[in-house]
Image (cartoon, rainbow, N blue to C red):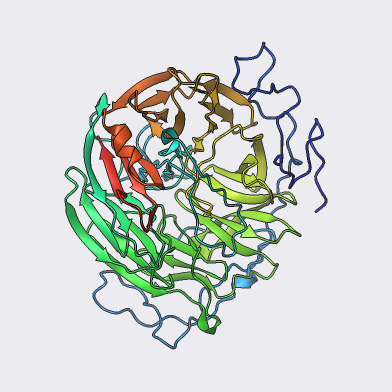
Length: 591
């Protein structure tokens, strides 16, 4: 594909240090200054897209989807509670499917019917979604290893305490029917047991916390991504085990052993109180878990045969009754409730130089494909029950990478270049570009917990709007200039800008009662609080304040954490625990 023409203003070409789309020429040097005269908009995206609008794809042509294994796995072992095949015995390999038959570069086949059970209906707009977490992560993650991911790793050496708990958890609200409007999505990080039932409290006080286990110096760090909810438990993936805690008291209810290497991953979503994690010394196994009973459903050895693939830096996603995992050198998909193999590949090559680079779950299953810098990245909405066949495919313009998926319904992704990890927000509909918003140069804060495509936490999406957090900064007398900006998904135009009073630093973390939920971090001289913002005009109202001890509690929590808002309770959950650091926590709870 030829290089797309630049937008007005002659911005630098893709891959330049300034990002894919710089601010328009009319934008003032200080994007946080007083509002401009009528007709000028310092935050609005350029009126002409940073890359050409793509035309809708031609009518799909029939083609073969990824094929399940030609030979069924061995019969199930008793005692798991769910029927279905079990992993192969040592020395046996999975029968390799025709994974390359469904060519990623070709026009996708028509959407097939879902073979797994119907998902539970989504809550009404404004209620707590069923995947309950809106975790804002406090600092950019420190990913382990690069694997096949080509994302730029940004390490912030010093971050003020006000930013330590920022990010925005992703709850992917499940649609209940074919034509229902998609419900609000924040980014990944936890899952909810259902609509909010707890009473609204004007002050959130400390309830309980859980100390993190010690990490051996030889291990350096341990990743333990994952927090999920049932009606009784908050469940945390921890070092070498998954633990369920009583929501009200924090008392341990159950634990499942799951010894794991340093950087194994987990699904961020759950389905009917089921989820899955990656485990094993080399992260070469997955385990499905019943969160309500605290029981292991099944385990499986990831395919690879004699190629001895690296299973580290993997990405895992749950959407409906399916779980998919990709590790750069291959991928596999399973029915979550019964372990039926949906697809698998040992080499990760689809036949057109594309390979699965990352997965995002929730309302839909979205795959990001890396086709090499000489071609492009692609985004697919796939049908897991139809052997992972694509419903539609969108190819990013040459020179741009798909670096994050911030919503799966509607599909909203972040784009980047070789030099800048996040440059644009792109809204995709049925395989075509609907709109894009330029992130400019350091104008917005994008918080993530690592290199997974589902790791960004402060870009919020509802059915027709994307909400971005302005980068906090100091000017003059230490004043914090922060805020939240809303953009229409339909055309990328700005709707409103909202800034907190009293120089608070704010970040969007999710939704409450049909409004955007923002977190204003505490400092040594003022309490933290939660605010709601009207989606129509950005009017800001205090929702709840945090107890006077919040600053000390959060400041000593650890370096990597994310925030989950569930049933009027605020959870801060760890993502990584480091060797040689004291005072680290798995969970800190305010309610």
